[in-house]
Length: 374
Image 1 (tube, rainbow, N blue to C red):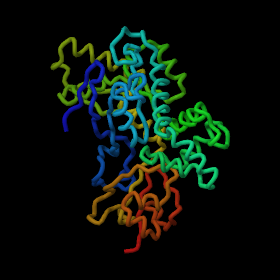
Image 2: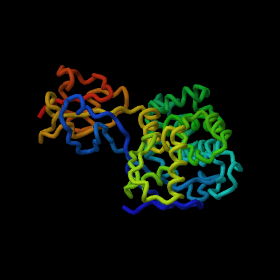
Image 3: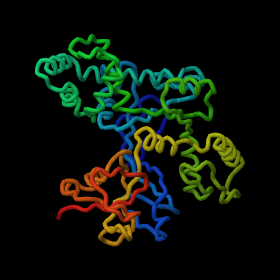
Image 4: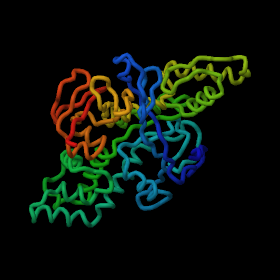
């Protein structure tokens, strides 16, 4: 895998960069009192790092939904996304086109509203003339509108329940066949927020005017102050053995200050002071907020032996899965393997050793054995 290019000029990113990040949870092996043997994740000193897939895509310019710039490519990459981290230059030093301007020159909240509208118009364009056909078919043939819409939008990872929620939130006429373009757009705006939930990484907060953060907070989206530059510098310093730093921590420890020149020493002191108030660089925080708060996921551990918390090979807590809060035991079975879901009989709670049914709701850090027909 080649390293993603980093630079402060427009269209630095052209091809989408796929990567893996991690979110943290407390590993249950600390309750069991034995070491774990992670397979699909990592564990360091009782902290479990569960992988998530990240896709860094090309930025948008105005009228991207019409194909301007790399808009079509960006929006096509967005189809499979569960959520969206919008990295905004909170300093106001970058304009809509991605060009560098003076700090405080650009209103970063405009970037948020601009992206909202581009995605909404994109969905609007996908529906196009087919929308009226779908609406009339639903009305005349008595078919569920949300089902017909889901079939049209299936490539966007949009579900029937999302469409129903968007219908309620849009406040439109109950008869979609009577909608005008402005009502259809309002529906698309509601669907955009529901199907592609967004969190804003307010980058360059270390140099951002305070009023810019207030403007971003006024957008209504979750805002996480970040400094990607500080995070990158700290990771490089840690790899060089100069400091001890774990991503997500609010501070770092010096290992060998004698290897630092005055400029490096002052830079680290400046970072440490800023991180004290911000409680970290924000980079790890934004990943965990989008997973645990925006997407509302929990970490669950399936096992083969509910008493020893092992798999068939005797590995302790080998796998950790992210599940939607409210998921049940059968959902976990399908997550592990389709055959387990299809042949599900019951589950066993690894903490209480009690058998539970398919509709047993999972909780954070549950350890669960799935029992299925052979």
